[in-house]
Structure formats: structure tokens, C-alpha cells
Image (tube, rainbow, N blue to C red; front, top):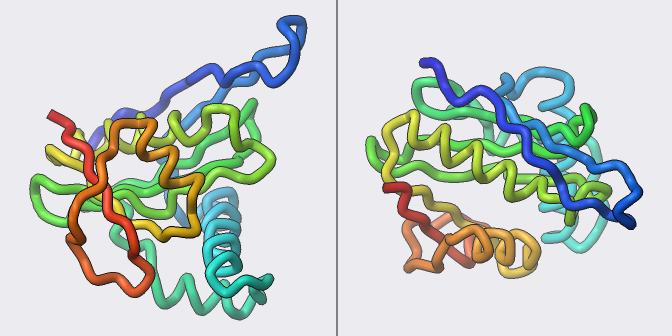
Length: 180
């Protein structure tokens, strides 16, 4: 399936007007590429480390990726995207179908060095377009209470809290956004 392949979004300039403007490029990419794998590992290290309140080991990251595989993040059931800030891969996210009209966001991650530059919004815009291309009419997600930056991003981008739609072991908040 051909999808919305690329989005370029200028990021807010972090310095005075004379500073160069950074820009995000977000595009589908197999989750098995070197850049996507590094980003998925960084995502897992951060969410697991915050949950366990300690740094996680490489073996724990390996096990986590085995326990929560990304194999549904390929067409026709989903898509994985990588965001690059001025060419450097610093963000990722996935979308997968839960049913023919409902897609779910997963693995949404922006490297700490790039937070506040518009990467999260750029990721969501492309992931929502990918969900539409898969036939979804709404996007859902679950997240945890300690992931306050993620919850704030979703609220800013029009996601509303909803009752639980799953019983995931780490789910504490559930959000939805209508696409149509």
C-alpha cells in the first residue's frame, strides 16, 4: 500500500531569529533498519527505566523488545515511521490497526536532545495520515501517569481521555482522536 511518505515540518527556532531553523522530516521506515532499531531501543530504555526508576540493562532492553514485538507495524496492518531533525534520526513511532476502523499509536518517542522542537507533533501528523491510509477513522493509545510529556503532547494535538479500551499491564491513561 502506498502511504503518505514524507512530511517536512519546520521546528521552532530554539535561539534568536538569526539562528538557523531546524526542520523535521518524518517518513515510513522498516522498524528493522539501524536507525529505527536504535530508536526503538532508546524508547524502551526510557520507558522501562522511568517505570523501574533505574537505568535498564541491554539484556532487559533485548527482553522487552522480544516481549513486545513490533511485527504489526508493517502494511497492511500498520506502519512505523522515523523522524529526522536536520537529517539525524531522533524520533520514531508506530501505528497499528486494532480493528478495521480503529488504529493504535505505539512506540512514540522523541530523543531528549530534540524535545521541544516540534518532533512529537510532526510524528503524530504523519502517523495519523498513515492511520487514515489504513482505513482508520479514529486513533487510540494508552500511556502511563509518569509519562507526563507524552500526555501533554496528546492533549495539545487533540486527543481526549477516554475510558479504558484495553487492560495492558502498564496502561493508566487512554486517549482517542477522531480522524474523520
